[in-house]
Length: 130
Image (spheres, rainbow, N blue to C red):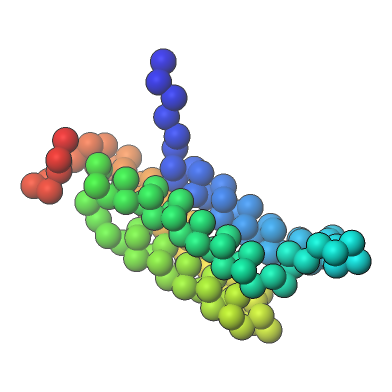
């Protein structure tokens, strides 16, 4: 029995986990700098997390586009969400106002990819290599 990863579900889960991380971590873990741990306002850590989210999300969306629906809309919506996440890292004073639409766009992109994949099941186009 082959094990398959549902990349859209993984993308949605990581997006929601990221939103929870960004909203809850400052509230509950604000004492970490007392112990020498500083991940709350660590720009390198935040850029790394956005980059990892971008890689995982784009892989999931590319797979759906290439193997199933051949639409670029989910990748475009996802890119808007990632750009909003980067803007949140750059402009911390607007982080809540940028985080909410970023998560909305990222989750919407994965939802669209999921729906398009289910709608077309396994549609082939001239660019298919399988």
